[in-house]
Image (cartoon, rainbow, N blue to C red):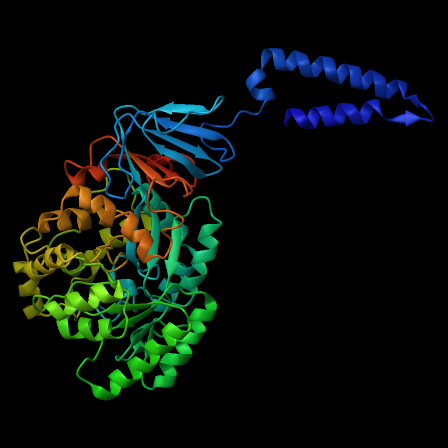
Length: 506
């Protein structure tokens, strides 16, 4: 009980009257309570005041002092920094001359550590598991893992991925394609103190049949057979509160299809929503950009981007998410299913949930699957997990687009086979660094630009006054090598700091 509770009880006893006189029994109990309370406080002052664990009470003012601060804006790092946190939000962040430490504030000295904003993965799928049980189009495992049951479990248990994300330092995720229930995660996650911020776009509009993913009550893919199909989907998802509407593959050379897409894109603008596109060829990407796409969620992979692409993207204010590792993730998952090599994961903090681990460890049970033809097996055996991890065209286009001034955001396509929720962000950032980006540039892309893609930059994405106190603490300087993001020790979400061990599945 709090001290105020005891005092309230004492006052109640003192003013219990019979007529105009204080009850003798009440007076005796009140005096006894006062003596007992102050005797207890003398021996147990901390218990009497109900002191919270450091940083667990977001109404307190808390100070993080002494770390090297990277604010996410690309500004020079601040040594021996101060971050003042009150009510779950940042009151001040900067040097010790910039920020005054209020009297009575709880000060945590983290000298020798490094602070960045919480990471943001702008490309995830909550309905997918990291294996083929949720991708029957790639390898049908319905006989062992019925797809309806897989998706039902995904819908009912998002918390296992919330833990994986926070354990990996990810405080915001953007689900850019899934069942309509994924849109509801936006509100529920926002109220969950142990969930990252979530944005979600819901089902994808596509020219391909959606049958492999259809359920009686929901679907992932909405075929754009008529303009009305697209318009109604946009109206419904926008009414649900979706953040974006995604097109999955664009038939840029099909005039009738493009007319339907244009009508749908116009409805997206009318609804005040944003268009997202899975467009992996230059012609598809330019068709998407001509229709106002704000977020391209894959690399252009077939050829080098041209001046028209650059001009359209700059005109739109489009954000580019390259997803460099997802394609090779499929190959790694197929190799595991074929029994060639287990799918290994660098996960020293135990961020991957146990159900996913068990699923991947049993992958070789499908070594006789009809998908694994002899010709395909030959491809899998010849795949080099190191040399073939990222396509050269993807890296070339990433650098050309970056140098043109188009904002880049980090996204993994998590949930796809071989691309696991949470920890895949490290592989993605390291691949982007290998393409030629600097660690300092990647810190901005993995934080500020991600929040911008989620349309939440006013709330988080940088360590600056007025925003949620979402940040991570690292042991090793991330500006030397982005792989040092793996040295994370603590994550703070809305002002509450926890060790990554608190989210570990170990």
